[in-house]
Length: 634
Image 1 (spheres, rainbow, N blue to C red):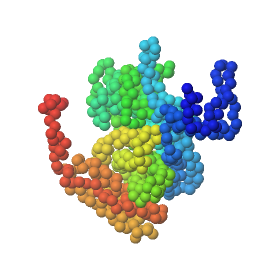
Image 2: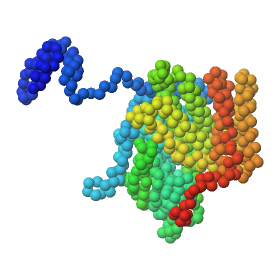
Image 3: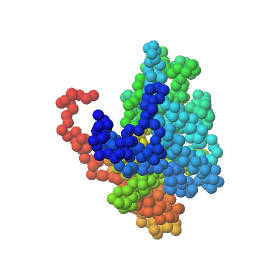
Image 4: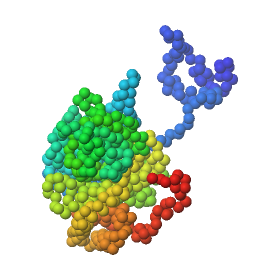
């Protein structure tokens, strides 16, 4: 029947002879076509295609066309960041640069090759918990992929924690470390998160006299993967959130031998696979089962006993998160976890403050790194993608959009690495009293501002890829999903704003005086530089904005609380303006001058006074009466 159809068709004799090629039988009974001339083999696909159309065969492949999009190429994360390399050239002495530059260049390339591949594997092979074994025994086995484990070893080998504590480069140790962490972060599959808490724990151990923390410090700062530990930071409980002092229910049962058993429920526990953790609890004893009124103490615990079993810890569940899915974040039940008190009662939150300062710096470094990654990818893609007859980068509107994002990122990098530099000076004992006060005042502002800008820039960056920016297979959407944690982790934007106000009130206004003096010194130096005449207008804009902000603080005390976020945001815009002007006066090229001017041309004071006295609750609650529907809510 089939041959009859062929004979009835208009196929050429060559095609018919091709169909009737001799066959032979293999030892297993299968038929195979006898060998054919080479030119016939070369045209086999053409024969098959012609036959398919002549015979109207139903099954065939889709016509996909010849065009495929070219994906963006990953660029060296370090050498392709013009602002960062310029910043380091300015603030790190030549002899130090000569020692670290090749390492940063090498690591910048490694970050977009094998480390990036490991990070993607972590995203595609997410952690899970094997709660019970086949025989019903509770195991609470946290399963992570091999790439996650490998990233721990790389973190040790590359000195991503150790660099800040080895003392090799003095006040530049911290800057070197944080730059390297910024290179690592966007490729790390979120391993940068446990490193942030590890760094915070190391800083706590460095300044502590506790023998337990001294022991931990040696592990936390090791370059040996076999010795290297990571640390958790288990503070958040069901009641708590940012209200740690009012929401911590965990208790520590005193064993009267220096140890305690912890009982409590930790609601968000990142770095669940860490080797140790720092946590907070109220102390009780058999004689006094209710916590004293002295407040919380800080405790050190190792997550596993000597036999390898969990130390009185049950993994209740892993959190199902919007992003950071590579990272195991869990709800943990502490049921007699053996721990050691490492602070006085009532000093727990103060003792863990060192950890919070470090983790907030990490948060900002990660925010800058996420923005820089999406910009580098979008920049490369714009040279490869054509639209309306020309490459995307040739369109003037795209150029403006991308330049606006670049200026935001440079501003955030300037603020973040300035704070890192101040921390390095403080740790080395070379910081002035004013610099230390400025660091304390700027840290919450830095964390809040860079995190909010990261969401703005990364979202805009995805648009640069059109529909491809929305496709998970490209590896682009994960940048946005992971960035969303940045405004939340280590304190939301409102909490950071209140933290800034607390710093102002706690110092009786000295924090504002320090900021004012610092900004004025920078703008005065710019005006007296060789570019003073060109940058003077921008310097005046910065100082006028600062005067306007301080006047508001002095004349509107009743509005300070509702205006807290606007005040903190204004400080960020003003201070970054001073930093960019200062850097452009040093660098002196047209690009840095343009960046500084454009930053200062925008609205630096973000206050909206007419909104602070309005009944904002009425706007939100209009049409909603929860008591009528549900009764009393509390």
